[in-house]
Amino acid sequence: MHASAIYRRWPSRIEQIEEATFPGLSPLSVRPTGDLRRDLRRFVRAYVAAFGAPAARAAAAGLFAHSQTPSRPRPPEMLLRVSARPQFQDILRAAPAGSVDPAVDPDDVFDMLLGAVLTRTLLSTVTARNRPVERTVEMILRILRPLDGPV
Image 1 (cartoon, rainbow, N blue to C red):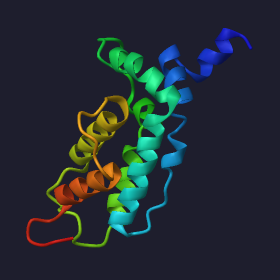
Image 2: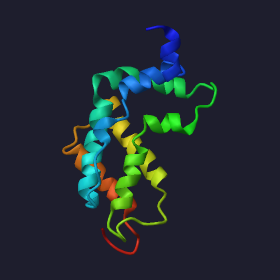
Image 3: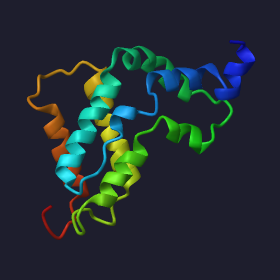
């Protein structure tokens, strides 16, 4: 295949690496059931698996470094192609009424979840923790919980 054919599909090597490493994050295509705890648990497990894969661990440092360079801005659709943010938002939309505080910004919660997943998969932890996925799900539920009542 000629290079020009490759660059018709991907504008740069970075996009090729991202798609090869996180191909649409297909393991994260979990269908929301409406059970917020269960859906978050499945989502976090799939997200941890995606970032914990050898290819993702190998590519992460270079992709993070590239994202910090002032290169030409990437259109939002490029970022969403390799993001699990839409799946997370689908899970929140499917949650039972009253279980998610409407004042909580889902993008902020997703960013916190991403930080927790990256820390658990890419960095060595100082202490061994039992049930890290369950602990992460519990933290996210606490953030999402309406102030006037339990979920």
